[in-house]
Image (cartoon, rainbow, N blue to C red; front, side, top):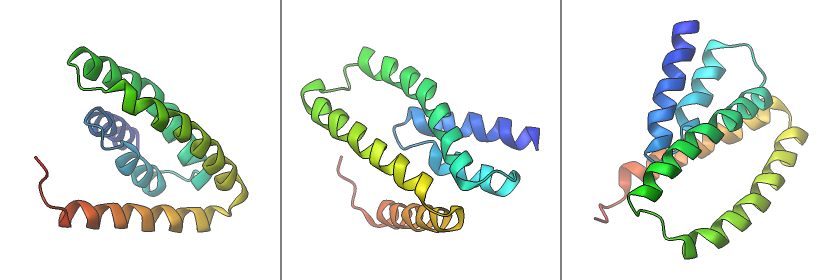
Amino acid sequence: MTAALITAGFVSGIIAGMGVGGGSILVPILAVFTTLSQQEIQGINLVVFIPASIAALCVHKKTGNIDFSLAKPIIIYGIIGAAAGAFAAIALDASVLRKIFAVFIFIIGVFQLTKKDRS
């Protein structure tokens, strides 16, 4: 299990650095390879997200990839949404939360597979 967790941390860090969201890798791996509740898994994901985000933010800021005028309102409303989501996650049964997360990841996957290249 330790090798799976080390691999999960490494791969989710790479994915997070790309701006995709390392939780899309970390949460399913923790759900499969541990006996943690869904709330505990998502809590761990959030703790892991902080240093990964800071590292990615430093690199992207240094290369000029951030428009802070656009980021500010997203950050403000993101904090409000994160608090609401955290309270909802605590209130929901773990099996319901796991299903909601699975549907969300599935929808994001379908979107990524079907979107047209915007570059």
